Length: 81
Length: 416
Image (tube, rainbow over the protein chains, first blue to last red):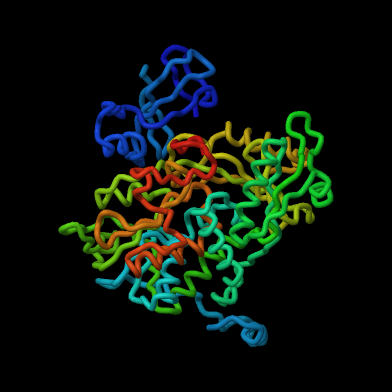
């Protein structure tokens, strides 16, 4: 799999590290335990389009949001996080 | 038909014309007491133990493809019960005990072979950690032996003991561990369940789960609606998708894990060996191919195929452990979709919806759990409560904090 970094161009996925779902809203520190449980553990895990955080660790070291189809690994967009 | 020396001799004399299919390819009935969604090893085992242990036979197993077409046919066939945490060890040891009597119980040759599982360690600190795990196993009445480097050398002289970075200092051996024939496990449970009246319905994809007033009513499928009082979800990598049909969100991500088989060679490795300094493990199949694998690819995937960086990583692990493996050619490589739970341990529990039960989160360790998972899930469905053996595998442990963090890898699937 190759990821088109907006700063470095198309690079092999081994240059990046994967964090997981993008766009999770971090609850306020005093939010109820349920909100923290949702944020830390629960995931949508779709078969299809998925927005996820990748870190270009061996490149520009920017955090990126990659929108990728989990059934085909085809990447629709890569933007700065 | 019961398999025996007598039936084999009779069929040999008849030119093998009298063998019957091992199970019926059933059409779905309009309603059942229990529906099992997912016809893999765990689902078929659940149906088998529902019938055998609890007398519940008005059961159907719904499989979207053919039985054993998912991870049941894609794993590396290792069985073991060498866990540290009490919540895990009692479960995996129950599963191991079921493996030990499985073939007589099923009247089916699952080729269970207790050839030993050896986990190598490469430093003093790792030795201490493995000794602790071995002691924990022995406190649970499970066999474990701590071997030094010379004892390991006597078993596997070809390993790279003097590796500059990761010299082999010894290993933790469970002699009762080993391998089994993965397809035969699915077929044996299917036959056993079928002989007790369970319907095995193939090419029947569940497309919706009916819930009324917080209680399940049945499912919609590609072969029409089916009513049921209780529904058990055993969908491995597709657990999140199927649970979402009932409005549930799970602490699971689906990741791809690859495995490999080399060309067939003469007998070389008579047990299972795992590399302790990277993620690599190897055994030899009865056909002679080395069966090996490593880590997950590390990003969400439903594609049942992996990528090259992880192939390279697995091969590097193999070369560090046993350099002779570099002379072999890889015959086949494949990927399976793992239901990676957030603490690395499985879930066998009720759900907030009445009559809906969940068996998921096996990460990449589901095969060895097959009989134990089915046995516990059948108990949970039949009695509406967990057995002591699976009482740690609660769905709400992520909310309560009672995590089962066996490998100390934290709450992210990509670290396991």
